[in-house]
Image 1 (cartoon, each protein chain N blue to C red):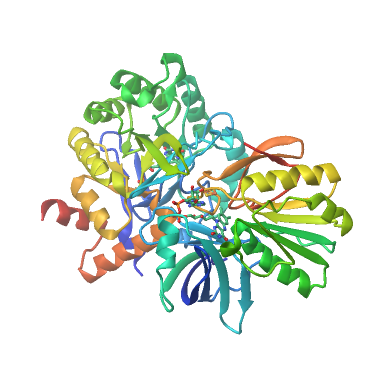
Image 2: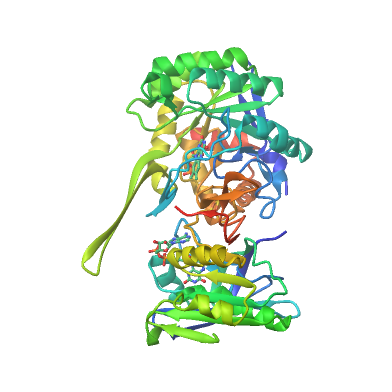
Length: 242
Length: 313
Ligand SMILES: Cc1cc2nc3c(=O)[nH]c(=O)nc-3n(C[C@H](O)[C@H](O)[C@H](O)COP(=O)(O)OP(=O)(O)OC[C@H]3O[C@@H](n4cnc5c(N)ncnc54)[C@H](O)[C@@H]3O)c2cc1C
Ligand SMILES: Cc1cc2nc3c(=O)[nH]c(=O)nc-3n(C[C@H](O)[C@H](O)[C@H](O)COP(=O)(O)O)c2cc1C
Ligand code: FES
């Protein structure tokens, strides 16, 4: 199946402090929440991966949305692109969330909200009850679209109460490692299954270089799994955190 | 397009051992997987060969911690030879290579001479046509100095592999030496049919930022690859070509058509593409097609003629 695409930037806009939304027009045919694209950023050796935050299929073409936070050279390069510029990306990469018909809690910490917005849309379309909670460092960084937004504190504050109060049956999460680790622990403690979308620096983003592997306990065996191809979604309880 | 033009014959004139490739372009070890990983991006028929991920006797999980680090014009990796091991390779990966008729070099690595001997024997038993020996591995029995950095140990390693393996034997040299010529000659006299070079250069990636009121730092030591190593690779290939009569497969930072010409001038008979696959997964076939187009447009009848024109023109 074709995975390399040349798209055109349909929109690029500053949506919060150091945060940008980019919409790409291409002939990508499908994408699922937590799948990602990896973009060639000028002459950088390593492509930069970004979660798909929305996907809209048209007759022949499609619109793929990503949200990105400025970090270094790669994201600065992207920020400076203009509407109409060509963009070279690989997609759709990795395995998305496994959507289940269960009352779901969606946790998006910081820019980790990106795949959650796409997931929320899908769950809504499928009439699956869900609640999206997101957390940002301050007012300026808020990305809209959540049912509840935590500002300043941790998105994990009082989350246990929320899970119980809302009878949550499944947790989806994306964000920094510390948050995902807390979600993992909580999911084990409450015996509520969770799906976590991880990040690792990537070189190939298609499973060949073995640069992005993490260790999991699956089928009673400790083995390496690549975040790019086997992930980025892994289940709570199986990750061996470094 | 007339891809037949790109047919490449690598021949050890002394023994007549020969490897015929559809095109001179090979996916480099560690960047190309085991078999059909790139099928989503390229027509595998246009590929000269795949050099498999380095295979060891036992499967390996590789290194813990950060494994890759980007630098200007390249990257540093310390994957630590994560691979499925020879047994799984034969059982799971080889049948796919055969079924899809993908030409490949089996890239092998070991900790001891015995490891290499056993791997060579298994390659023989499975009628594997070409073996690429990664000698940039620490010799556990001899103080962990790389096999490939000492002419005597390289000669002895090569001749022992040669005893167990009659197919096309390629020795892949490490550039982390001050005397690449002696190493190439040692491999040739040990019985190698071909030299491939270069493996990654030793490098240290450093990231240090002052955030808040402290330094946030990271150091990743490993093998440097990508376009930044091209001048070193060109130099090494040239040195090797001047030292031996067997063919040379060149690699190190190749990413465009002009790089192929540069490496031919330096002494290359075929090429491997590594890190550039990460930027452009279709690069191996697009390079083959570009090369083909160039030859057709400029009336170079075949790859040998082109090489001749570059070297003698
Ligand atoms: C599956 C996945 C999905 C992601 N989704 C998003 C998203 O939706 N929005 C968003 O803003 N960010 C996302 N990221 C992180 C994003 O890829 C990095 O912020 C970006 O690559 C930084 O590049 P830079 O050159 O600007 O910064 P750099 O200065 O190069 O790096 C800053 C930090 O970014 C990370 N990083 C750098 N290069 C890579 C790479 N090749 N692969 C992965 N991480 C890297 C490292 O942790 C590094 O310390 C995602 C990462 C992964 C793995
Ligand atoms: C991620 C990665 C893994 C590699 N693994 C191997 C390996 O297993 N065996 C080997 O002989 N060379 C390995 N190499 C080296 C490459 O095959 C090649 O020699 C080197 O990268 C230089 O070529 P390049 O600049 O085109 O990448 C690896 C390189 C990279 C980047
Ligand atoms: S980035 Fe290469 S295996 Fe994941």
